[in-house]
Image (cartoon, rainbow, N blue to C red):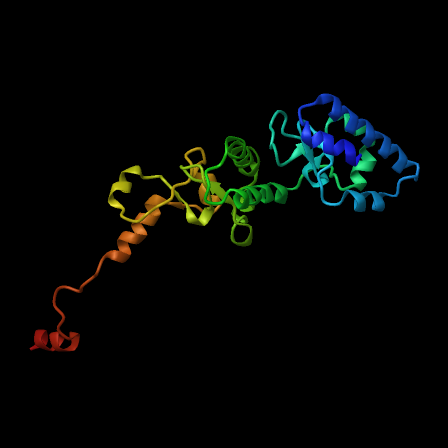
Length: 239
């Protein structure tokens, strides 16, 4: 298996080598089922390296799930559906760590992984597409309370108009474009493909609200009119 995986890494597009890896895994699955392959020893030998072939990638068990309710959507190269040819060794793959379906936290973790990988850099097209797919097709389908919980320790990174990732609290939603010229503060705007409702739920500040706060705090209020002591004024009126 190790030799086949090395060949697979060097020739990712070679379908013959990919088929060979699948055949080896199917054989290992049968050996594990009859007890001749201790799963713990196998996993120790594999270590942390990716070893399951999916499309043109080798991936880890934590990147795979059997249930895939998103039809034609893809989250490449971060999350994958188990290919049909590996369903025959489902028990083996499950004992290796492949899950039935992904949890909500998995998608947040992917966003944070992309954030750490490309921090302060413009996202490549595949990563940007993956981010937008997760936001628009997965997180947008959650209830508003669920989305609003993605703050604080679980704060979600979102793409800016420059296609760089920032934490939601660092971004502003442009709901008043005419204000931009009036604001001297350097502002980073969330990507235009992100809806206002989703952005605000995840912690992005609307530009109108931000501007009004800055404007109100910049005003210096001075009392005006008569400031004579009230008791003295009443006394003067009575006299």
